[in-house]
Length: 73
Image (tube, rainbow, N blue to C red):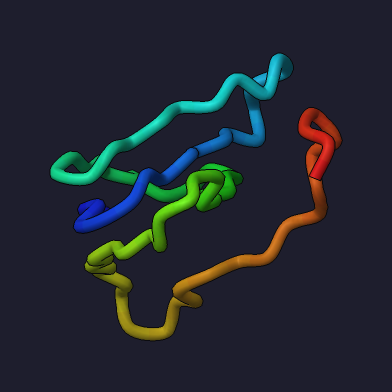
């Protein structure tokens, strides 16, 4: 994901402390899949992102998972 405007705040489901990773405009990150996470706009500027997904034929792009319970949202 590339952040074009705003700031993306990224939380990982396997982090027991629910420590956010902040990704500012002009930066990005690679999600290798197979993890539970949420990305939120916690700033005052609209968050604009560019996301590219390579998904093999027959596989789901997104798999909804129950909240891991480590974050209060």
